Structures are given as C-alpha cells and as structure tokens.
Image (cartoon, rainbow, N blue to C red; front, side, top):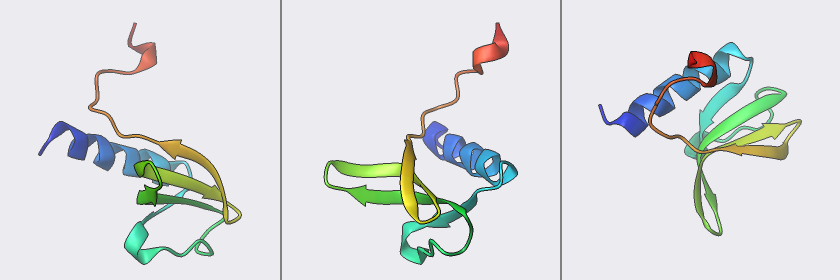
Length: 74
C-alpha cells in the first residue's frame, strides 16, 4: 500500500470515529448525515482529497499526506 493510500485509510477511520459520514464523490448524498466528508471532490483547481460538508454546506478541506507522526509525539 502506498503511503498516501494508508493516510487516506487512516483519515477515513478518524473521520468516522468523529461522527462524519465518509462517501466517495460518485456516491454523493449530502443528506446522509449532518456531517459528510466526500472523498476525491473535484474543484476548479484540481481535486480535494476530502471536502467536508455540514448541513449540506462546504466547511473545510482535508488533503491526505503520508503519516509522519502526530503533533503530540514530542
């Protein structure tokens, strides 16, 4: 598995644990939950790894990067 694929797998898990409904863009359903994280969302400037929606409104973007530790790892 490539580092970015592993990062996305980890991000999916963390988002789900935080209460987000994670979806692929091809299966987009913003009404599935109050908080929806959409993978590989197309933008004018390229593609966001995740676009976050709350109550059907875009509120943030997550870009997957290879895991290099956590901020609190010292």
